[in-house]
Length: 117
Image 1: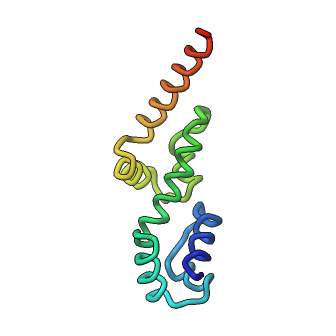
Image 2: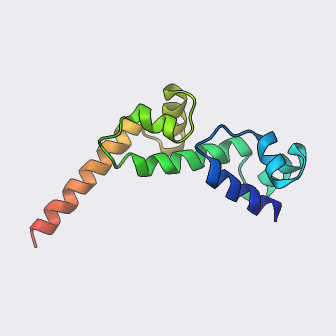
């Protein structure tokens, strides 16, 4: 139950500065217990889980070509653009710029297919 609450809290607050201590207080358990239980239940440690949640949000925002990548990085909760780029590439095996380019390419291909009908 605590881990479900913790995951929900991360979802709702992923764009904010998050710490294990803050999360533990929010779900009323010790940080050490939360850390151990969180890893066992989710398969990811707290830091990796938060990073994944932020990158998932960034993937959605990258569809908006009017948003700069730096704006997206800060909007989803990263403290620096370099940290965002490093984590994004580690998790998705491409940079945010490459990811956006692949989205645009896919979108363009879908429009072409629709117009061929």
